[in-house]
Amino acid sequence: QVQLVESGGGLVQAGGSLRLSCAASALTFSRFQLGWFRQAPGKEREFVAVIRWSGLRYYADSVKGRFTISRDNAKNTVYLQMNSLNPEDTAVYFCAAGVDGGLQYDYWGQGTQVTVSS
Image (cartoon, rainbow, N blue to C red; front, side):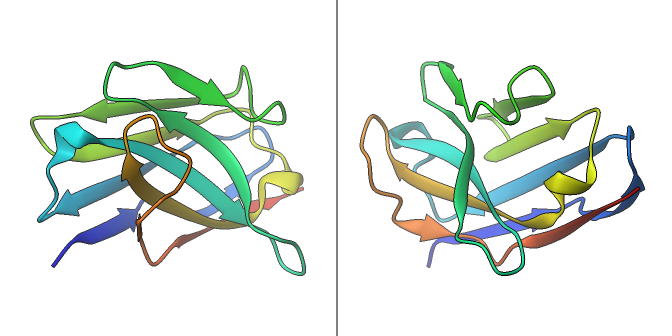
């Protein structure tokens, strides 16, 4: 059974940094692109970043220049380095896996809370 498990969330002051991790199991990692999404209270889930198997990365405009997505294929893990955090980044962050190059994400983690205080 495929599992994605996020970790690294927490409470941080504005301007601070956090690094999220997402470990995948029972997944042929090389076939998948890995994405990060977030959902703030009262808002819809939104795209944050994705990394293709090739290493190609895409970011939401709201995080470009502040967040960096990376993957360690040997560890079946994807990371999200978040710098210069602001209160608008407060949300539950989810990692997801989808067939590389596709639009759909088939597997989702349970989410990790990120709270940025002003």
